[in-house]
Image (tube, rainbow, N blue to C red; front, side):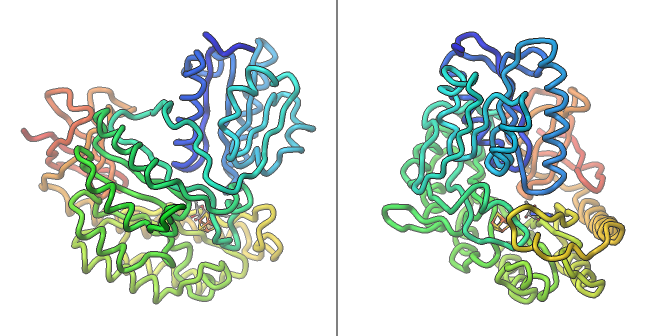
Amino acid sequence: MSLKGKKFHIHTFGCQMNENDSEHVAGMLSSRGAHSSPSPELSDIVIINTCAVREKSEEKFFSLLGRLESIKKKKNLVIGAIGCIAQLYKSQLRDKKSSIDFIVGPNNYDKIPDIITHYWEEKITCTQWNRGWKEFSPSDIQRKNPTSGYVTIMRGCNNFCSYCIVPFTRGRERYRPMDYIIQEVHKLADQGYKEIQLLGQNVNSYRDPSTGRDFASLLEEVDRIPNIEWIRFLTSHPKNFTPRLAHTMKKSRKICRQLHLPLQSGSTSVLKRMNRKYSRENYLKLVGILKDLMKGISLSTDIIVGYPGETEDEFQQTLSLLNTVKYTNIFSFRYSPRPLTPASKLPDSVPFETKKKRLIKLQNEQKKIQIEKNKSFIGKTLKVLCLGRSKKDSSIYSGRNEGYQVVNFQSSSDVVGQFVPVKITQCGPYSLFGESVD
Ligand code: 5AD
Ligand code: SF4
């Protein structure tokens, strides 16, 4: 099937890495003459970029696939499954899901245009591993946002946290040469991007493949690139977060005073069973250093409740840590066993109802913290990068402050893509609201 003039739609589940991968795939298809389309119904090709990290993300994939299968009964549609579920369930998907035309794992996205052009009728499965860094599409990236750009700096993870499927679906760490990263950031700066987000499963373990220069050095290089005003990065593993890195953040005027620092549990015994390689005390010490160095730093985190064997007392430790750190935002999940992981071999001993109760308790506790925090912004003027218009009301603009909080605001002129001073007038637990002040 020639790609020229064909319409494609990519549905992305999961993390920012997946978002950026989809931008690469969209770029590769567009450079062969295909056009992106807003809906599966209007498309010739639908690609689902899947996430396997939790049971729920898997369920969402199968439910979307069901919807696509009913569209496919009425019209010609090529369906591709890519990403972590594709890597994990390759043969089962090929044998049991006849609606899927091609299956491509996270290391092989560069092959997608050729697979569609030549081989989709063969129901091809492409899930080989590669050792070194492979550059997918250095020039063609079809980015979703023209103001804030993702830049992938590494792929894979070597940590093997006991609950996590990622090392099995994305493989071992491969680092992108620093020169390529710098070139991409320069290009974004030339195109008018104001913010970049450096992405990797564990950015703190980054090493330039030829010189061995570390993540702090990469940040220093990126910091020198003119016109990029805000630099963010994720995800940081607390065990690899060095004081040198904290000082690099402090020295830079561009690196945002914001950090996503996944905790997973506030109990040292659970952290040990999770193979996280830090204790509650180490984590709190790191938070203390960061807060001392950068006043008002905004911290967010990931938390799992109901890990095998988690006692009420261990859960209480997580709750109490929440009140010590006072995160700006948390992402919290019920533990679900994932194939191949060491934790999946343990009895999933915390009853579903208990997990549910703990999750609600945790989220309610965090909601109170966020309401308090957000109220303290009322009356203040914040620097906001306007990323677009609000999805619910197009007369309202939407952006993020340095702390990565959503700020919705009114403005008399079109300010999309600009930094705007916004006076905060109202807030909810999950966002701030205000008016631009000129
Ligand atoms: N169950 C629940 N949550 C999980 N995560 C990863 N694996 C699991 C699992 N098996 C969460 C972690 C991680 C985030 C991306 O997803 O909190 O940081
Ligand atoms: Fe999964 Fe742990 Fe790697 Fe994060 S650091 S991707 S939680 S194994």
